[in-house]
View 1 (tube, rainbow, N blue to C red):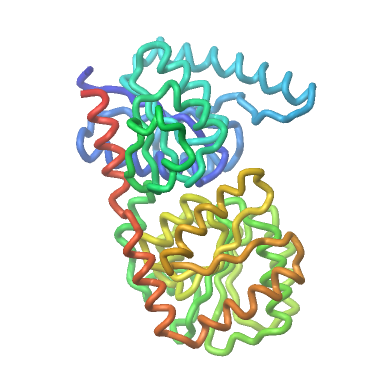
View 2: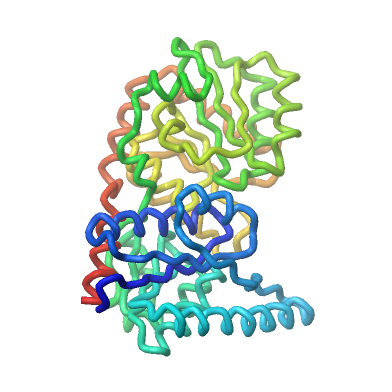
Length: 371
């Protein structure tokens, strides 16, 4: 292994893919400051927003997700070929020691091409059910770093020897959460009020936003305030909705400062993407989870079920209808608002299944592969 090895981190398109990779890169640098992380991302603006502040080098790839139409598949295969050219040039120029797939369609080319060119290859599999990209890449990689032991139930036995339950890496700053008072001040919230956090992750969640605004027409949260992360595409409609309500709320389109968010959260209403689940459990936040309802394999529901079965969360299926969702949310939320003992029990349950050292575990797996 060279003295200053380059390690490729392939994936992007959402914070759920990029933040774990950033955390692993930081963990690797703690062990060997000479390691050179290089991210191969998508062309989406969110990748630039997330990565630029870190100082890590990144190369956008032209890869696009496959769409099951003739035109969509042709566009995908063209983008695959163009991305392969970029990956091959990067491998030839940088001579990386390994490649780590961060999940999703943007990881596929680099992991497959790297493995076929003799690089050690691994993927992070943060969801219970591996996505199509990770299922495809299982045949090429040496190691699969899983958040949940239940992933073994969704992987062919011949690949079980590659599975390593590391947890899902979360941002370094979340592991050293600020005090509640510090976070309250930075977020512009009231110290005397308890805080309900609403989030649809980095891109926001339209049906969650709509359900909350509909529910709040019938509920007054005395003694509580809301911190609502709407997503950039939805912020205008969410702010308009809150203007009609008399409930104290702070609406943000997006924030990278999730350590502050979880430091103030007494309850969270959230999607159940892998990173959200990892952060909720590591920080011990009691939650109501509405899994993303549009995935064919419903993998967010499988994630949420692990938390719910452990007593760390309440699982509510998203009916894609604001009234139906609001009607289910209301009793679930009311069961927590004024029952501190129940919130404490859920918080303790979340911490018991959390894996806050996941970044170090994945970094150790990468270093073991490359010797």
